[in-house]
Length: 155
Image (tube, rainbow, N blue to C red; front, side, top):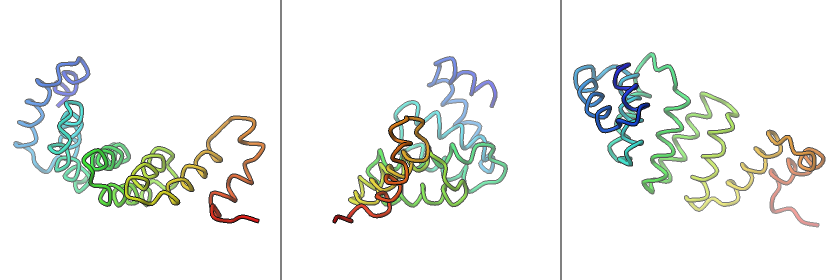
């Protein structure tokens, strides 16, 4: 597997894909191999082919980068237009990695795509207030956090 990952990192992605597909066929229960195989498919723009490998990786044991697998699967599902599945994936990821900024940002995109603009904006405002080091954002942090939860409130 190390050789296949090195091939991918060296830009020899097609060779890496061939090696990883062979490894995944030989060791179908290996979550790490499944994850690397999903990743290489994504790298090649083969999102639909990546999905089952991401699912296999997340369903297995011993995956070292579960957060990356949730981000990869959720993002891939969103790109494929499978917005509800994408939202569900990001929410599962957040259940395992509460508050993760990357998952929250990608969740907001999937929410927007699925027609849930209010929750998407609310999620992004909360993320902005929590993570921005910008002086003006921090100056108004309490107000931004309040309105993130109360977007429809007016006087």
